[in-house]
Length: 280
Image 1 (cartoon, helix red, strand yellow):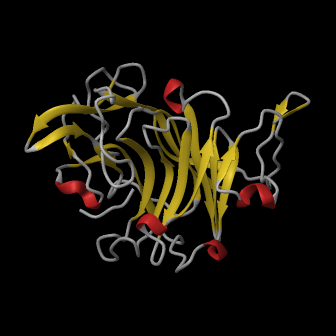
Image 2 (tube, one colour):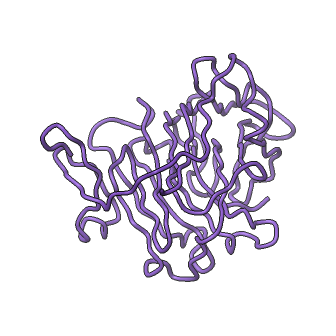
């Protein structure tokens, strides 16, 4: 998103795969793969499990809405609103962000984008969310982070960490990326992770990063598919300060292209929880 206004003896292990596996552009989880990572102990620092009555807006003490259209620097087509029809709790412990095809304030689609700016940010730690994503050509769900210094250090100098981005026309592929000075937009550092069976829109999956000084590790369902370090970027490393959280569903844009007659609407992203930890 650009900004502009393995099983062994009954136990499952998380892992850093061999260097060669990390060097390819598309990763996939092999059924009997075993990975091994340094032991990391975590302490919860922030969370939202989206409990509350159906139709309620997300907790205003945790989340704010971005409102408006104008493409958001990506030629997106939706108007982001703060209406319950675009973002609300479902009464079953989920936040539902829904993209709709409708005429609204000059746009042909509506959706929602929420963030924790001014309410919560953190440098380093584990950021994770359990999400069931939408699908269809031109649908662009995302779970991502932005540097909280963005108001004084504009994008891409503030840094961006995309934990989950998906193209609705490829619902079996997840993308993890960073954008920074010298490697932003189409020049971002990125890697795709593909399910060997199934699609991300068919069930919930856990998307996470484990981020520390000099590294960002990317996970889907606790399988490490990418590690980004300062040596990997083509410009300045800008990931040593606090970042805040964003959840959204965009419609159209440079990354995914236009919706088609085969794109069903409405399309909803279900978020079971978002949790952030720091290392003990």
